[in-house]
Length: 296
Figure 1 (cartoon, helix red, strand yellow):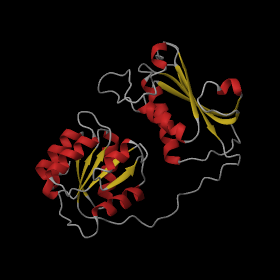
Figure 2 (tube, rainbow, N blue to C red):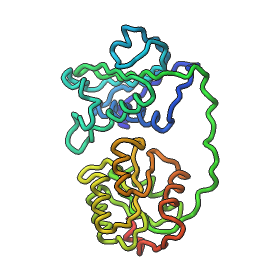
Figure 3 (tube, rainbow, N blue to C red):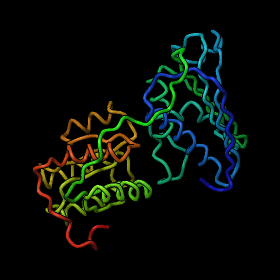
Figure 4 (cartoon, rainbow, N blue to C red):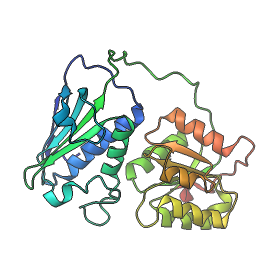
């Protein structure tokens, strides 16, 4: 986050609980925050707020299938460049983006829309050029109080593995953090910044690589085409598909082509360990990637 961006928080107390998938709810909020950040290249103010709001029949007319009632309101507002009127109806369409080439896939807000709809909610956007934007999400609540936050259930200590993993992801932070997690679990790691580099790495070092972890959405060559090219070299290759999307639609289509397993982003160390162990199989060879200079 640019240090010139100030973040204000205004959270209502005693809100009722929302039933949903924690990972997906975290993802849509993160995507809205990133969208607000990108709209303020010169800095500004981002406000994240929550509350309880009554939607009457008139308000529900703006949303397809909305029923009157009380909703939990989550709002992310920015003081950025704003959205032209002609683009407001398109911003949730897949692959629509106003960002420069290479700066966005056009899937961020589409993912937000899908997650909100999957949770029975609705999303509204108000914006003007030069006047910033305000995204408001309305989620149905369960009527009960939120449960006390607790640690995730213990699944035992992550096992120590052996073998070589090729990690293909265009995000520097993901490669660094996931690579460090894999190394902590005992694996040797090779990294590639996109699908094209991943294919070339596999062409050169395929005999040493036990597992490939590939991101779904990347510039130059996406996860699906990257998998197809690697599979053409080795029909028995083991591949984990990593994505912030849930297991449906486009993700399921790729899985049906022979992907070994799926890793939902964001993931914890124990989840990564379990997915890699399951994909690698204990009976697999445990060859290392060669000398450390190649594991970069």
